[in-house]
Length: 346
Image 1 (spheres, rainbow, N blue to C red):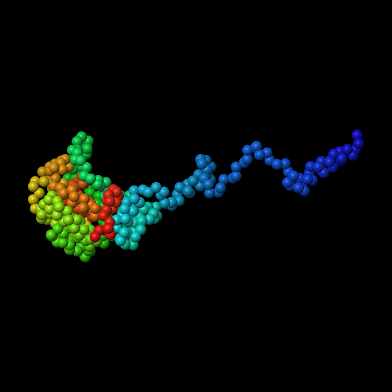
Image 2 (image 1 turned 90 degrees about the vertical axis):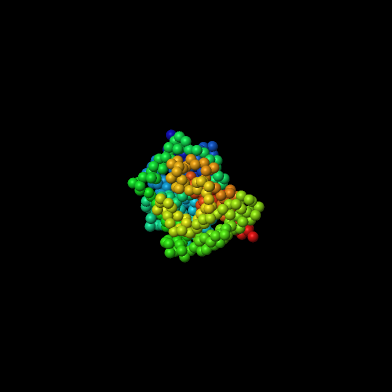
């Protein structure tokens, strides 16, 4: 065999295959487009769908622990925004801060704290306080139903516990409401209440609700000109109670009367009708089963006038207080009950 033959083959391979690839990269064989392509490497910030590695688990943990604002409104945010809408002159902002929803009242921050509305110094001791009541309030008085069976037994047990002085009661923190009404003691309360002539009698209420109460009176007196029922009710009134520094009966919770934000209207003769659940306990052990026909009620039109200006009526509470009206516009907002726009009134 010719000894130069292997050299000849090597030169042929060098000329036709190796040199073109080196000198002209585009001459490389093209990838087959029908073959599956390798996916790009995952982003450094993306998480594996099911992290099984230690690195993946660490990434997932770090993401979960980030202080993110909740994307779905929770109860705290909804309630605090209702307060903001109800008292725009006193509340500066509602914001998510340090892991909880907060509300700023006259430059003082309060935390939702599971419904307790506490200053920062108390926020982690929320179990020491009861919640500030934010309740369902029906636009119309629901039909009366006698409690029977398990419901009646539950109410009886509650009544037994109420009478048992050995069971300590948990009070709500006064700090938020004190700040909202700028009333931390009796002296400050006295400084904040003003006199108003209401339905023929002078009463004392917080200065911030003078306009609302004046418009309530105006609407009631207009209606009294055409409604015999309303006129008789107005003429029957004898006791008017506004500001009084006191706690709610049988509690250590400050009454809205202490802030000058509530008013009681009592006729000179109740006619053996029941008006306040606690008074009724002397004669009716199961006071919750007293029917509406045995309870004193103001005319429905009067109740609606009060409600339209932000006052809740105690006659719609389980522990009924049918003489009582309390300024709680945030309750109306939370329950979707429309309020009168003061700017639209003459």
